Length: 169
Length: 344
Image (cartoon, rainbow over all chains, first blue to last red; front, side):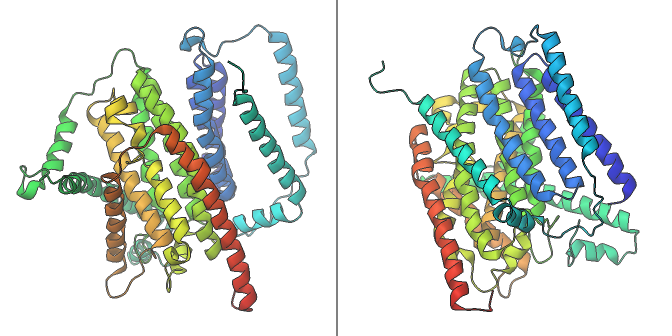
């Protein structure tokens, strides 16, 4: 894609992502927040496509945007008290939240500043899927498997919590 | 965007436009073509479904408007277009208004990676099949939006069922496709079709095809898995408060998804557009309609199943079976490589 067009698309996507993210935080209705979260994820997927990481973009939509549906269900089921229009209220921890956000922001800026940015000389690899697979099952196999075990623990834990114990009730 | 050997792009090249105009025109032609394909197919499919169900139940079906009732669906579509678009007072307005559009967009986007014939594909992506799955997964959110915004108990029940059903059946669907992807070694839909020149994958992957067919049936919410709508229990679920064109958009997307999932089945398991004598696009259409008729046959044969049976079938039968299928496929590929060195 030509330079000008891709820069314009990047800014559009960035505006979409950040705007939707702000809406997620600000809106008082938790269902609307979750729906804007879908837009945020799709915006991020668009940026992945701009970076020629098609596989990552598809996974982003499949896992995150698709997963929001489940998140929404939890949002609806867990906010039984009061009216849904006030289900995502602001709390009064202004100072603590400000400190945590500032610390996180500084951390991210520091990480960005210290990262040695290598400009990729190109040409872009034709097949990113194979490269990702080889990286996962080659040098990064241990973290990959650890993540899998972690997810399994999460699933088993969820089942244990959800299951009623025998004799109870 | 348009890959090499693309029919439309090659044809446009003969006119001598600048490249940017060429790619723009290619995109527009494909978009218009896909939209026309969807609308024509849906109009005809509704008629076909009513006729098929009628013949299966020893009725005649629509036979009053036009010869043999052929214009019935056209009349219905015109009627829907002319109706008032009612927005009830108690709905969550914006979500209610956006949901039908949100369900129609992925339904159209899915057609980008379907190879309709030799060199007839809108966008030959490297991740073709994965793109299809990713885009189709967002349909769940649109149904949930519609069901939630309607502010109606039946609609919300339907939306909850949609999430439980579609999210869980997505897993065996993806796993069944993995077998084919392992055999081909590529996610590109054109590569998958090209690999089936000699033998269709339904013969290498019969179990995967069966899992795919069942899971796809659940994904498009068709009987016996039409719990999301369940007319007798929850009066059409998420669509209950919709009227006129917004209702039609839901209906349209449902049939568009039926066509696209059948097209994916043809591409993955039935050799795509491959076939002797006839032109490639005609082969594709013939196979597509065989798949669609199979879906209709199943819908009008089996009764709707209960939600707990539905989920049990998925988690305790389809998911383990699809995992075993992946294992057997992997071992089979390795054994094949070991037996015939130098061929792979």
